[in-house]
Length: 159
Length: 289
Image (cartoon, each protein chain N blue to C red):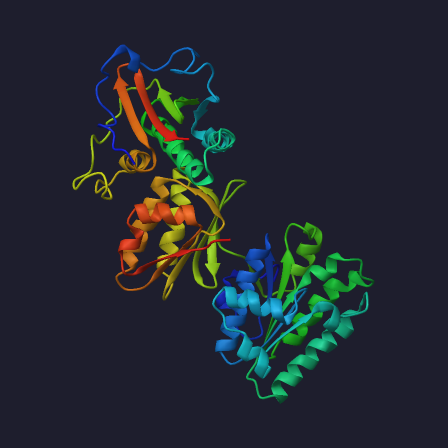
């Protein structure tokens, strides 16, 4: 499990702005999945992510990891962001990339790792933080950008 | 008493005529196992009528931590099919069925048991049986026979397969109605009490949206005596927030008692990530099937 830099930081570049249109994901012609979600459709979103990840050749165990990562990123957008968002999943460079964008105001996300390092169970008493912490535990790479226009969070799983 | 006062399965006493309604097999086995377990530990004779033979009954009890073999061997526990006891062939007669039950009460007294518990799976009444219109008469007769007797009968009705009119007509003859305490149930998720071993059972997909019923179920489980089991065997997904809530509840309890988290491998791994394996009082049991 690769430790990424702080998952949420000020948007460093224009590339970090949340996708507004359905343009192709970076490095790929068409995403495997491009689905909007809100609080009532997280179950359907998980089912779709599982089906597409499995069809793309991700192992059963890693598919389970991707589903929890996708859920936590989406739940974060629902609970602490805009209340809805968009998930895209695409294959590129031997990996599945999952990206969740929401156009809500920046949420107060616990930055960085919990005291004691990333390998330790987080101590802050916030479900918010636990979800993103879990994403970084299970994904090969995880990252994100937050800007005035919203939040983009990604998780990558090697195929 | 229309339907009888609702009661937990563990609250049934002598001469109760209880009407158990259930929605899935897991529930009826769980509730019946509690009825059998409590009966055996009170020294009562216990008879379990179902579609299952003694081997399957013993297996279902063993799966829930109730050791049935010695009781089956000694005759304290008997398992038989309804066809062998309540019917003759495909014909049902209320007076004959009540006669069989009276015989059991008498035999139990003769054998020196202080009382009798009988669990009856009523699904035979869904099959093409002659005389089925005598079902309410049978239930009324059982109620009359049990008044003053040192016996209790647990009639088990599948609430999805019996029609509401039949259920309502038989319910009136029972002193108690029994069902699994359920905190949440929809197409995706079910949160309910588990009786053998005591705790809660989570089935389906669990996320933060079920925070309230999960918190309530955990709070009630914590008030039970002894060790607590959180049975997540039928759970296919659990999010970080719910995992965290269960670990926190288990940690508050694990100082004094044991908390058993039963789960499939991927959910066990997630609990381990949240530190569940690091507390001496928490036992992570991986169910691999």
